[in-house]
Image (cartoon, rainbow, N blue to C red):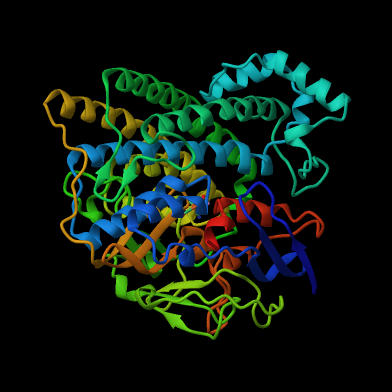
Length: 528
Ligand code: NFC
């Protein structure tokens, strides 16, 4: 038995450490640690909910819009407001733009380098790469030969820049397995993705005043006011991003996956899922959101969300005591001791639902949407299972590769919805609807915002007295996923996913890295 550590985990936001015990080439135990505390729940105390919606966005530069929306929802619940139809559509659009930015960033620029080796692309035949891309139905926008020449210059000058520091090692049997031509295609799309991320962010900035950290979503509605010129710009950007996502993300995933099919055999995690739902439809019912709310227990049994079943345990985290509290009564009292995997080893609290740890994320959302019969998602997942030769076997996706593939389906779904929402907004404006903001009639109350960020279920709850916040608690998607062991010593979702992962090289346990990245973790959020 031996221990190995990946610290820091790179290509994520924040400070994340994974320590594991390995026996006979397999992980037998794991401890996941978030290493930076900021105390944002304490920062917003005594402030107005309108200010909190701006301040909590500073938790993260990748998912600020979701924090703004979960916060505004909490305040609107406390004040008894339902926002107007125009505000609902505009929030969907700015949230959707952020999801598109985040998912494109994650797939191509954060996770792909666990599978794609840009150095191996130097050995590709560019003409064969073009044939392969055409056969795979993926985009051929980049001049593959010119790109290979650029990469060769980088490599010869030993200036790998954004590609430096990764575990590219084609000699390692658990390493990188793509043919050189596919490495060249995916490297081209990695670079195209940098541009497309910025297009998605441009949509968010157009609606939010700036990005990251938008200025327009506020308790009561939105301060964005659409003009003809802005709607024109929006329509053209939304179409540009949609066309690119459609041409690349799913075909690339299907081209890469067969080479890493072994990753269907590990990384399952706890097998239970939470999704609070995101993208409001006109009913404002969380179970009818475009990606609906739901909880999936053992055997993927679906139930509605029950706030009273949520708790956060701190006995293995650097907080005072060992409380296990519902967030409506939650406290945040930081107290650093030492890093000790037998005792306290992280700043992350351990959330539970009905006494058990749960996975949050895009994969959770898709499973809930599948169970709630969202037709686009059902068709895409059924199609994926057919392509894999395992029709109807949803559970096969509960793995590192399944979790990695799911996000691309969600990206295409959201990119398509963005086009619908722009049209819906245009129709509403043409029809004379000019209501964007509703003024609260009270400034005292208590409310919870159940929402989703790109990385999963997001929960903000606040108590407000005469316009000032007295208590504020947040549970973040990555908090669910990187939770430490619970009071009974049961490991958290990511820890469970790491257990059973094969390790070939103790210095470069790439399958563990793939498993960690499949969750798309953000420690900056998790330990807010
Ligand atoms: Ni940071 Fe997050 C927010 C997380 O809630 N985890 O997706 C969201 O970060 O990206």
